[in-house]
Length: 95
Image (cartoon, rainbow, N blue to C red; front, side):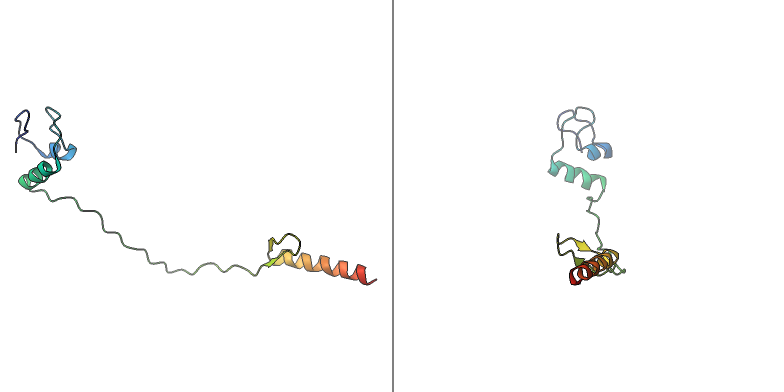
C-alpha cells in the first residue's frame, strides 16, 4: 500500500504510528485496516481480564462497645477501663 500524498510504500512503522513517516499524512481507520491486512498483521485485541479468586477470610473485628458519653467505639481494653471507672463511680455514689 502506498501513501496517498507522497506515494511511498507504507510499512509496519507507518502502521504503528498511524501516519506516513515521510510526509506525516495521518492514516484513517479504514486505511489502517487495509494496511494491516496487506502486511498480514492481526488487529490488536484487548487483554482478557480474569477476576481474582480471594481465598482468605476477612479479619475478625473484636467486640466493640460504644462509649455512653461520646458514642466512640471502645475496644476490649478500653471497655474494661470504662467498666472499672464506672464501678468506682458506683461505689462512690453508694457510699
